[in-house]
Image (cartoon, rainbow, N blue to C red; front, side, top):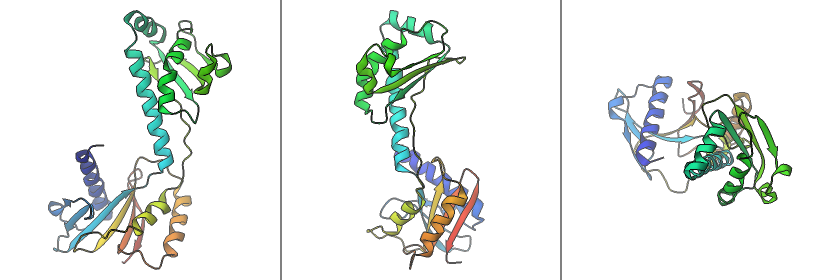
Length: 249
């Protein structure tokens, strides 16, 4: 994400927060800032200055797995596009209606994905036209491929060929760690206004609210202080609601 797209995204998140919070913020005064300042400074309709730090709840393990799958997908498409014309035409004829799922092993690195591509496509070219099937690693012609890939699955009925690298991501609960990281920040925020934290749920899969919310409340209740913030909010953008408010009333 570029700096400009991140800025636009955070401004949109804050706009949603203002709308759902019914905060009397003068939208014309909203300023996007950069560290060591908080993300947002603005004023209320009554002229009171306020500052907000924004943070998304993200499970880093899930994000790494997702990025790895997207990287593998890009490599598969690029390899297919760079096949010699005769091979590319044959490949497209075989899989023009196919969804190709390559199930990589959990410990398969990006470099291992790249190295395995010729063998993956060699296995794919053995499929008969129109066949839906799965080849498991014990059936690979190249036994070395099993070090990177556990199976290749072909399903039909779409506008293909499409590549769908399969990745299993175990989703954790990022709420407490995210808030704790903000509370333990070494460098002070540079603002003259009262500061509040808005933690938001957007793209990351989450445990149900009845799981993450009690855990986060238990953590907050155990804290002597939530400084440098006077208030902490949890904004659920998927459900378009404020899920938690903690701190000064």
